[in-house]
Image 1 (cartoon, each protein chain N blue to C red):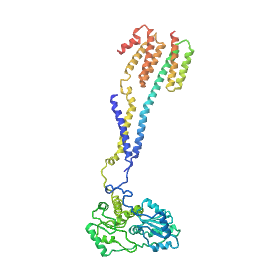
Image 2 (cartoon, one colour):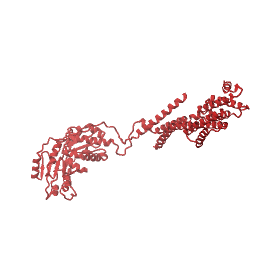
Image 3 (cartoon, rainbow over the protein chains, first blue to last red):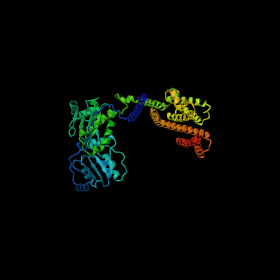
Image 4 (cartoon, chains in turn red, cyan):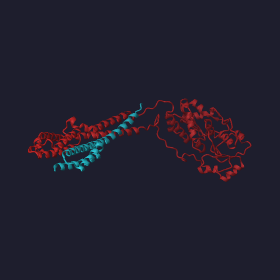
Length: 456
Length: 103
């Protein structure tokens, strides 16, 4: 019995291991599709209100504004920035009572509610966000965003919204009025000189005060990015388009040009990401940029973060990046076979446990189980044969019973039944034989005597 | 990478089967052994009773009935309780006949 104990332990150990492998396997089923080409330090998210997006604009009361709107079709509050092409807008408002209220950007929640409470305004513009009834006009292409954020031009939004709220058919064909021209030499030279000297040009009226160098380096992978920051350009005359001219002057260097909150990229790999970065950025943040007056530094910082994300996210059919050695991933293919080995071991040891009684069968392996009983059986059988040879006892019914019990006892031993069966039967036979022998004149045939002689 | 899920499923099924087998097989075997044991004892008792009956010259109705009942139970074969019942009927019958023969 003692040498079987380790087998039992091993069996349970194998079962535990198999269970562990199943758990590891299930836990490893979580797979992420997160593939990066590089690791970026974590950036803090910009907290609401702390990004300088609010202005200190003050508004007249709702009643005053309502009175102003009633008096004039277009009311511009102090600080309002939105402008539009009067000719094209007049074409859609002709003959209709369309009243436009233009509020400055960067209002608090309360102030925005105040502006929205002016019920007689058909169109309400906060910053460059144009709303009317329950509609909001949102730009959806680069030209829209360039006009809206680079020149505060809301003509396109008005031409979309005014027909919608006055039940007119949509306007087909809209002409962008904010023209762009190549910069003159006298405009370009000071900018180029600044860029050569410091790598940045901060134009008069621009809210960018210093270039976020680290963000730029992360975004473009080099330290020599050039930044030009200019205020939003007026709509009434063509604006100088610095991007292409400067890109020609500084080939091979990343160049970011800001007009107001509009950001353009010129330089290496522009085809690969500039459009997607710009579309993603303005589609996501355009609504907030239009309502608030974010400083250019914050807008540029978020844009550069966006570019860095794109550059490191592996969107462009590059080979998969190197993956560091992961023991679990390397060992994982072996897991099913380790599990299978544990199962087989457990099965083998279980089989041993099941076969144990058969292994211990005396008939096959000659163990000593039941040996004493077999000796006693043999002795009693011999005694029964001896007694049956005597004429006085031949027909005794006790002898017959004893012989019957001895036969059954032999069968029970051969069938591997528990010892107590054979013992009980042998006791019966013993008693019967004793009963027969008592009537005989030979004391040596009493079973007690006979067995003492045989088994001693 | 080839799919290994059959390994897991078959392995789990085998583990379950082995667990059930190691739990229930010994129990079932012990029960079968106990039944066999009871029947051996019952048959031995019935056989003894028959021998005693043949040796007794006077018929004893009560013993006849008891033995008949025991034989009827044994003829139907059955579980352990049937075997012990048969033995319980056969033994007093044996005793009665033995007493009659000894008298």
